[in-house]
Image (cartoon, rainbow, N blue to C red; front, side, top):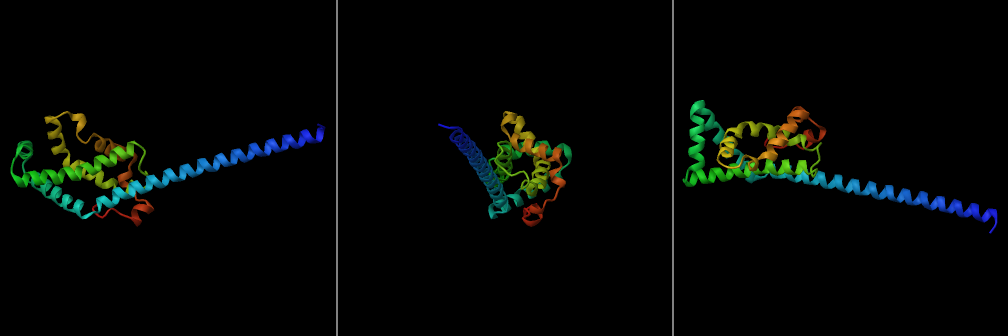
Length: 185
């Protein structure tokens, strides 16, 4: 083998290495884009669920409950919530179910956020609702936590709310949020 053959072999090896690196970068870029796409779709599915007819019915029930709760004197609220949570009346059971459905979507959103499964830019759209309804329902949640293990009741929703407040996402309006607002907000 002469000097020319070695130089050509080295050049081909270098070219193959360069092509391998380029291919790996393309694969990494494709994987990242796929993950981003899936995050956006997952976030969008939460926004669609927040805008569903069922969720609208739950929101109306929550708003009605909150209005009644706020009409009570502060010292009456704890007793009212305790009685509501213990009640066997069918209408109270249905209302608790509606409130639970409404709260659970925010808890799911919190779990997905901390798992890195939602797009943080798209999270701006429901951010106001996450904060607003945490504030509205926190007396009920706190009473429920007093009855069972506190770590089990909407902690991921609370963590998401704290993150939103820390990052001031509830005061931000993105192009996405302007284009695709959460109707319930």
